[in-house]
Image (cartoon, rainbow, N blue to C red; front, side):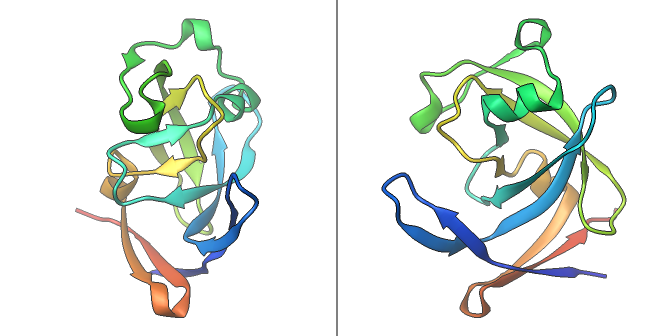
Length: 138
């Protein structure tokens, strides 16, 4: 059964605020404590992207993570590493999410096509400022 979430405030780099599909979730690596955060649902993003400081908070070690991932767009100048974490979202079963862990903090946590949108069905209701999330099942 789908779970409905409201759009939440997102603060831009120039101080502006707008409402966006931000998903509250908890991320964890196998050996570390979970971290509560929000991810921006971005159906135009090819991959999930994690800012550097969040990976550090999760207990990841930049030097031991491999392979290197090539990012595009405004993050093309930054190195990235593949990082697999477990995501807990509301009352749903935990799922593994694969992130391009960026060496930059100049990006929010992005939930993109690989592999967030492969794990979940998402319905956006922009006029109502909400979205629905359902775990995709084969």
